[in-house]
Structures are given as C-alpha cells and as structure tokens.
Length: 430
Image (cartoon, rainbow, N blue to C red):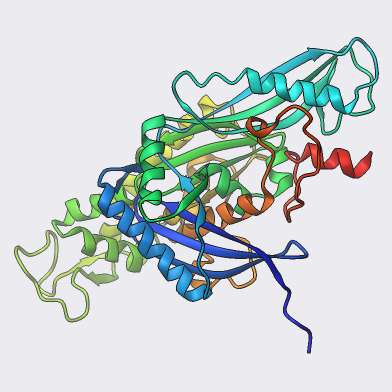
C-alpha cells in the first residue's frame, strides 16, 4: 500500500466577505502538491461591503470560521493570509527603465532594475498590497520573460501594483490579529480569484473576471499574463435578495431562500404557470401577507424571475460600462475575449447565459480547481477566492518590496508557474 505524501508545511487562509467568512487549511507536500486538510465558513458579521463595521463581531466570525477548518484538519495554524474585496482596491501597471548601453544583460542589471522599481513605489498615503514584476521589455521588444543574456540599450519591466485604502486594511488586519492570529499578508480578492479559476493562457490572451460577491462586484481585466485593470461596483447578490424582499414585502431571509431555491437569471415559457410558495416548510405567516400572493400564499415564478433580471440588468449595465472604460471592448464585437463570472452570485442558475446575452461575448462560470481534499460543498463559485488565497500563498510570487541588495533567485518552488515567476525562469534556463 502506497504511503501518503508527507506534508512539508501548512498554509492557512481566510476570505473575509460581506456575505460569508470562510477559512481553509492546506498542506503542501514535499513534491509541491496542495492538499486541503480542512475548511469552514460562517455567516459574515461586522463586515459591510468589504469594510469592518463592528470589530468584535468581525473578530468572532473570523475565529469561528477558522476553528471549523482547524477541527476538520486536526491541526491548527498561527499565521494566515487574508483576502480583501473592498477597501478601495485599485490596480496599476508601472513601467520602469534603466540604461544598459548595448551590452549583455547580467543578473546584476535585473537586480538593479527591480531595486529601481522598488524605489519608485509612492502610494500617496495608500497601502501597497502587491508590487510584482510582470513582463520585461528592452528596446523595441516587449513581453520578454527573461532578459538575462540579451543585449539592449535600455532594460525595463512592467510592475503590477495593487493599492488599497490604508485604514480599512488596518481594520481587517486587526480583526484577524484580535483572533490571536498573525497576518502573513493581505491579498486582493480579484488576484486570488484569478489564481483559482483562470488559466495561464486566458490571462495571457485577455480575459475579464467578474467576481460577484454579496455586496461588492469586482471587475478585473487580465492581459499579457497580468491584471491590468480593476473596478469595484458596490452592488452584489445581496442587492438581488433585497429587491425580492422589497417587491414582495417579505423578510430578507425569505427572499434569499426564494432566490436560491427558485431563482434564475433566464426565464422559461412555463414560469408563468409554475406557482411557488413564499413560506418555507412548517413556517407560519407572521405579519402582513406577502404582496401578489394567492390564497395559498403563492406567486408565479415568472414574477420572481422578473425581479431578479431587473436587478441584474442594472448590475450588468455597470459591468459593461466598466469593461469598456478599461478597454476590454466587450460590447464592440470582440468575440474572442472571454469573460469569467465567479463568486457567490455566480451560483444563480443561468447567470452565465444571461451575462453573455448582455455583454455580447462568451461567458463561463469560474469554479475552484479540483484540489485534493476540497469538499464538494466548497467546489462552487462562492469559494473560488478562498482556494485562490491558498494557491497564492503556496506559490509565494515575487514582490519587489521584499527584494534587497544581493537578492538572488533562490526562491522556494511552488506548484503554480506563470509569467510572474520570471526570476525562477531565469534560474531554470540559464
């Protein structure tokens, strides 16, 4: 009987969303394989649109979610990576160049370039979450993965910088620290989700990632292997539930149940004949009767779907305008451009077909990869960012803020290889 792979180290991650707080503990084997040991989640408390609004409630929710994951894993962690979906996230690409003088590029030149890029970081009072080298360029050539050994007059690199408002990040960090945990790093949710549900080829060719959370929808554009644009829309799946509650005069939990059980983004010819009950099994009517119901407390499914699509029309309209503003040109016939929708809101049946009809470009639903040990209940779009956090932590991509003089390429190998690992590629091929 084959022995089980030995776990070399543990990675803990917590995704702090407005709808749920989820935690995962992943073991990394000596061969670099990721194995999910435990995961847990609970309803989010003390969080509003990605911001901490109640420190005590947020801390309790974080601790509770992680304890569930630790109980399943049979192990505990003291350090965690946390995901952030709010806090005024923004993404920039900053090109940096240095003169070479036509000679052969050495490793010291690449080091000097990255140190120059490090010195150019000026967040203007904001917090830098990530500052990662993406593609090198020299003279008239761009998209160079490894410039070492080439001759050039000038050597440059595109640095992907992710910024966030400082105070909200400090609040998120403190909520986790008060749960007696150390924060390894804060990862922007769109970056983590991209690790989880986008292929390297999609990121290289150009893809838009729509991460539809409870109260925030992040619209990110990838091109040339890196995230090149990001817009946050303060609308999400909770707005759909609120619209249902308002239209029928029912409570939010009833509206959420209706959406999950009977909701869809696509109407069918039989919806007007299908009657659905407002109350759940064994639930008694308290207060006024829901608007539009018959004597049995039922409404046509068509009315529910009409409310859902009405709210989605506004959200997808904003998504389309955001994509146009970032140059994605989804509405200009760019049929080859892929759109991926993920997050808890993507669990609504028919959402991909609906989004494709509105945006006019191919749309698919992004789900977590089939990591070993990942529970089936967590292999859904709502846990894409959580698994991406663990994958990001395992990959440990280069960040120029942590590069000092004499920096060498002896980084720890991870299971994910992509264009951001240019230093690793340099060691491998030269």
